[in-house]
Every structure is written in C-alpha cells, then in structure tokens.
Length: 79
Image: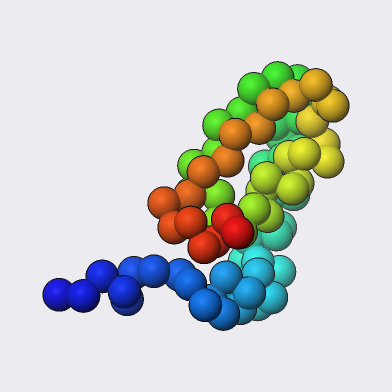
C-alpha cells in the first residue's frame, strides 16, 4: 500500500491553514494558549503542531523568554 495518501504535501498545508484552521483549530488554539499563559510556562513541547496555529498563539501569549519546541510527523505541514 502506498504511503503517499498519508502525506500532507503540495497544496494541502495551505488548504488546511485557509479552511480548517479558522473553522476548527483557531478557537481551540486561542483557548489553550490563554490557559497555558496562566501557568507561566517557560518550556513547552508541542507535538502534532500541524501548520503552527497553536504555536503562534502560544508565542504571542507566553513570556518572551519562554521556549517552544513544535514538531509534526509530517514535515510539509511545518514548512
């Protein structure tokens, strides 16, 4: 069985960001980043970061010295 059906490449990350992020993930990201900011976290590991909607939300709410490491199994989503 080919594995290309599991690869979010080409225009998929752009479509994901344009349609799915605002509809599904952005409200969740804002809420989670706000909750995390209340903990005054200094180091965060984000897995399955996708196109980075939560990463960006955390970066805007956490202290400047906070360190965020974001990863995703599917490299094109991070590019």
